[in-house]
Amino acid sequence: MRDAKLITGGGVSVGAAARAPWQALGKPEGGTVIPSQDGSAIGVGVILFLSVVEIVLVDLLLSAPLARVVALVVGLTAAYLAAGFAAALSAYPHRVVGGVLTVSYGASFHARVPLSLIREVAVRRALSDQQRTAAINEGVLSVPVMSTTNLVLKLHEPTRLEAGRTVGEVREIRIHATDPGNALASVRSALEGKAHEEEAAEPAAKPAAKPAAKAPGQVPAWLRRLRWAGLLVLLIEILLVTTGLLDWRIAAGILVVTEGALSVLGLVFGAAFISQYRKLRRAGRGRRAALGEAFYSLLPPPIAEMVRHEVSVWGILALAVTFRTQARPGDRLLGRVGFGRLAGVLAVLLAAGGVSLLALAGVSPLTIVGTIVLLYAAAAAAAFGVAGRVRPHTLDREDVALRWGLHHSALVPLTAISRVEDAEQLDHLPAGDGFRVPGRAPRVLVLHLGEPVEVPVRMGILRPVDSIVVPLADAAAARALIEDHQVEEAQ
Image (cartoon, rainbow, N blue to C red; front, side, top):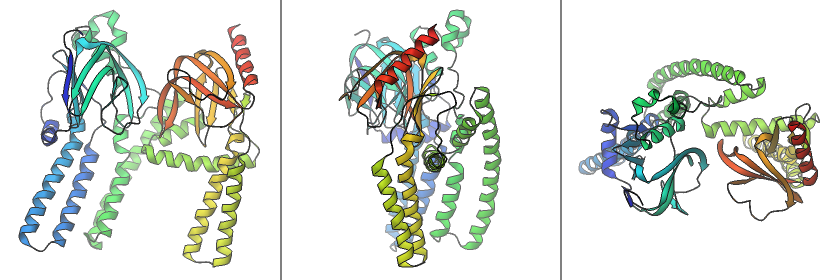
């Protein structure tokens, strides 16, 4: 080990949470800041609102004056600390100062990493399914945000880490940065011993100092903060009225205000939609793809995933009824999955149950709702049954398009494929970061990648992989097709 043999830090700190609101409002500390969160204003607002509702309801339930005072003090203290933990996510970013990189996750974790221990830093997105804020697994310390890390710090040699309950030996640290390109430039500049202001003076250092270019579909930070605003305004209004805290006169006044706010948000979202659509079109996206990506960028990720799922159900059924597929003109089929018999049988049973419920139980609000639910479930099952036929794997001049589920897909550039093989079903993925396309088939096609390719995992999160396993009925024919196409393009 070099200048230091220990990485120290701490775990959950109530004191840090108590200082966080003042830290966020005060003058920023020195050093180079590496933000890891998009902001916490909405979270703090929701916490404070729910705390006020809770305090009022508890006060109404209690009658003894002393008990009401104690409950008020406890409620205010809990509300302040909860808001402090939320504010700490922005108040305590990662920071480089005095030859030390402080890795933080709000008031829940921090670790001071001497720069002399860091051998290499790189941008690489990875997905973590850990339950804790920070965890060590096989020598890797992971501090994700929304289960994602995008900046990797490799150490010269394994080093002992002691930060609260997170204790162990680490050789690699994975963290999340809001702007990984800027974070990469900041850490590299610190490692080279140069001041951040002098980066532009060295022509050779210019390319490394520039932030990474934003992907065409990347949602601006200000829009990510606004996506939940409209939904929160409606939920708050509904909660206030249904709990009886507001009578209809006050509710009517609030309705006017909230509807006005929603109208302003609608105009902002409309302008953002047009801007995103134009960016995607300039980047080469098709009209339909650009419209879809621009629309989903305006929705919070969980809601966007649900809407995408619903649209996919009816889109797949429409393509199946008209005997069409999602393959583009000129694409060559690598293979498709047959009709899902189990899903088809389930769809028939659910549809029969929906019709029978309405016919046997008579028309009533309850039976109508039950029929609608059963018929929708039948449509969803039917969509899963025919998705394999409607969404085949294809090959075009530049990419291999892999499709699975109702809407998931990945484009693998032919230039990224270093080797192709077909094999029997594999019990384990190839060494490295691998991904297996969901599906069943007698054999599999294995794509070994010379450069990482990002594939969707869940809720729109992408993960870089260096190998992809694709179940196919005729994997040998698919392998020959890809290899022949690579030879043709090389000539």
